[in-house]
Image 1 (cartoon, one colour):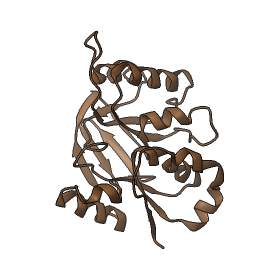
Image 2 (tube, helix red, strand yellow; image 1 turned 90 degrees about the horizontal axis):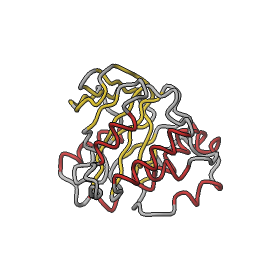
Image 3 (cartoon, one colour; image 1 turned 180 degrees about the horizontal axis):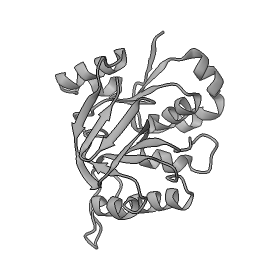
Length: 219
């Protein structure tokens, strides 16, 4: 066995966490592939110091475009060169660190448990689906109050889909900019990853860099 490919997301991964031992995950050293609810397992892999891949799961690969399927394979096999995307800076700047993150709702649900890794020196990636702006505000505010973002090097925002603006007209993008814009770290948005058809794979644990409007992941 070289990798663990999750079949689907939805709900339930957090129930597995008490039965999984980081030291055993580290000893096995198997790549984990998935996203959304699988963020809970990505958190455990991060605590174990093992790389994992935020990418389409088996149930979604059939509907993915050919370029995404090819990128999925390249990422699983290990990139042979750095890859760079041009995104939209919310807070300009430069930062580098180990990449970690995933689904915002799952991360917020892990707050206060022993399973959520610290973010010291990390470049964080966040995405979500079906969360209205006020709910995104609530989750980010809880994480801010808990000091979870303290020490992070920078933040990359992926797709936040199917989240209708509230009656006040405030968008999710505005909430993210307001909540994360005063951390003193670069924040960059528009990474094509999350609950979208062309869900670009990301390797958590890889070295990542933000530089102006450019986001780079090492090989």
